[in-house]
Amino acid sequence: MAKGLFKSGLIVSAMTMISRILGLVRDAVVANLLGAGLAADVFLFANRIPNFFRRLFAEGAFAQAFVPVLSEIKEKHGDDKVRLFVAQAAGTLGTILLCVTIIGVIGSPVIAALFGASWFIDWWQGGADGEKFILASALLKLTFPYLFFISLVALSGAVLNVYNRFAAAAFTPVLLNVAIISCAILLHDQFEQGAYALALGVFIGGIVQLLFQFPFLYRLKILSRPTFAWHSPEVTKVRKLMIPALFGVSVSQINLLLDTIIAAALMTGSIAWLYYSDRLIEFPLGLFGIGIATVILPALSKLHAGDNKEDFQKTLDWGVRFVIFLGVPAMLGLIVISPLIITVLFGHGEFMSGDADNVNKVSMGVAAYSVGLLSFMLIKVLAPGFYSRQDTKTPVRIGIITMVLNMMFNLMLAPFIGYLGLALATSMSASCNAFLLYRKLSEQDVYQFSGFSVRFSLKCVASGLLMAIAVYFLAQQFLWQAWGLFEQVLLLFSLISAAAICYFALLFIMGIRLRTIRDA
Image (cartoon, rainbow, N blue to C red; front, top):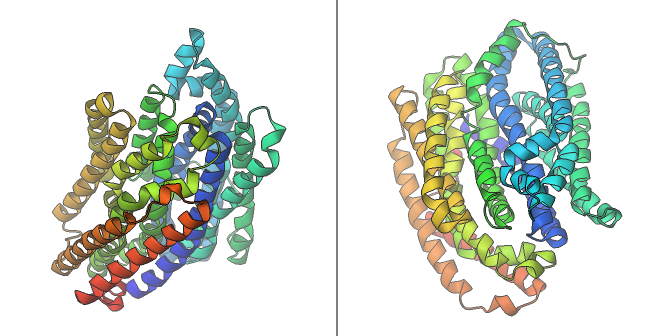
């Protein structure tokens, strides 16, 4: 089982790497065109709201409820029943999303006022930040429809994943980045405010992603006319599982949105600093954490449907071990070399002209988020341990506890260290979330962290710490701040290569081999 998952995980990670690299290119373009000032704050605000709902409903609650039910139908009833179920799910979800999208576009000023209350109040009182509210209301009319398209993309991708067509679903996000980059470059000068070009790119990207998946569904002979079936037994089952799942695996997105609301009340630039920091964290998280989570959920769902408890636990233990293997060096490496990464990606154009200290501020944000990177990854693996068994009630309880803790940490830290307090609070609450998920799985006798995985993890931590120390002192030998971009890029790739060689060599010395990582 683990060998197949390892291969599938590599495929998803490879496709995700392409998407994440283009995502960083996209962010570099945004930083170059908009900087970290008013326009960047507002565009990132308008883009985060539909993305929040997308991750909450589509990739979060819906996917975690839909995949186990779909896997069960495929195992027990065959493709004809799958085709009917997909048509019913697509028709029901699409109808609801269309209504929500229309309401969101018409009510964009209300949404902007709700999530950017400080901007609305300033607009109401004729303050300086009133311009942010007006621009946010306009941009939301372009970005909010993305929710409709990407949610159907998530449904299509879930079907492809259940049929082990991981590459197509994992490649799809590349098209969004291509659309945003293209619109930014070609249309930026066509608008008085360049943020409109980026928002249009989000809209177009949603359409292109949905159309891209149709041929793959057609080859599987899954495509059929969508049907609204609110009371269908299978759709009802998904609906009941989905409601509590809203607060489960998507709790980190709720925390990020709460951070955005609070950051809107802080000094100008706070939203942008948090966004760019989060984007660097999203690279290893998407590459490794989400990549493994994507392939492990269908596998666990299949094992649960077959009542194979021993392989279920082994597969979950392998997933935890795999994210620790890659998460530890990613976490430590980001902390050590984030200033150089940020300078290479964003340190030019409007990003540097607005505030010369932007690199340092984003770098500190990356360090604060990195503290919780491993926890973010573990959540992606541990949560499917519940959802694959169609248990969505337990994660909701843990999610509520975690959200309360996040707000408490925000209130404790933000007044003293501003946006850094928000990033650190998110990391702390994620760590609590991962711990509570594991403890509950252990109490339910579903999963125990094996002795082998404990020894493996200690070796990863030791190798990662030695690697970080070596790379830190190596980086200090160069005055790269005064270098040109080409030389900085060469140094960045050299440091990353040195870090990888050092980490894997240390693991090899400690007795870790490829089969140790690949096999359960």
